[in-house]
Length: 244
Image (cartoon, rainbow, N blue to C red; front, top):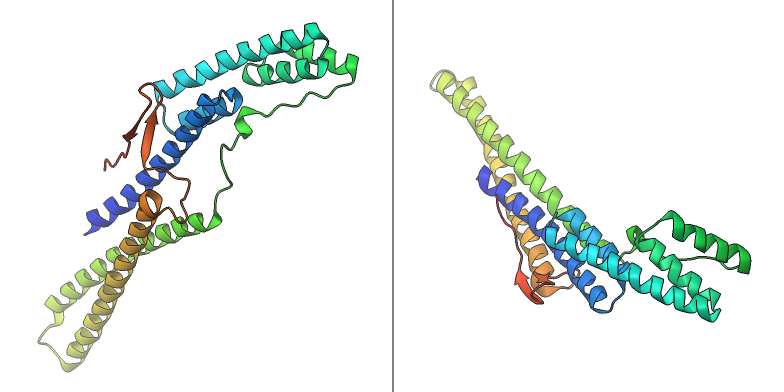
């Protein structure tokens, strides 16, 4: 029973982490297809932070390289036309993807000479989607608490049962007072066992609902995905990692 509970808890955490990774990759691919290089690079970087997949790193590097090249080209074109506002915007975007002193100097010169402000989103700040629903984190928190409480109660009732058995062997069939003590201890053990049974059922039900919502119902986890997108094959693949 102890191994089962620990396995369920570990399985839940693994599935939660995998869902977050899949969601980020899916959003990164959408940005990648739209050629939103800064957003795509930021999301691929975020996904790589969750799972060190060389393929994800390759796409991150591709976004940085292509985005930098594209924005530099557009910036140069705007600069030659005298459209300094657009040139500054493109140069700043390129510098966000690949910061370097030469480009920073160009940006500063344009800003000072023409009184323009350079603004571009930082890749690290890209969220890539809607704000998280706080209810789903409350649901996850409740699952963690119930799973933790169930584990503690399991260990506690097991310890109490062991102590009762030891005491039973020592004082059974001795005195009336000892008999009353055994009855009292047995009642305590049964109470702990009942509490553990109820709590474990609630924990399994809560975690089961969370997983169902994450991969099927999508009431709270409405922007989560159950499959991982492979940019190379352009196919969705099952990406659940449930090793324990």
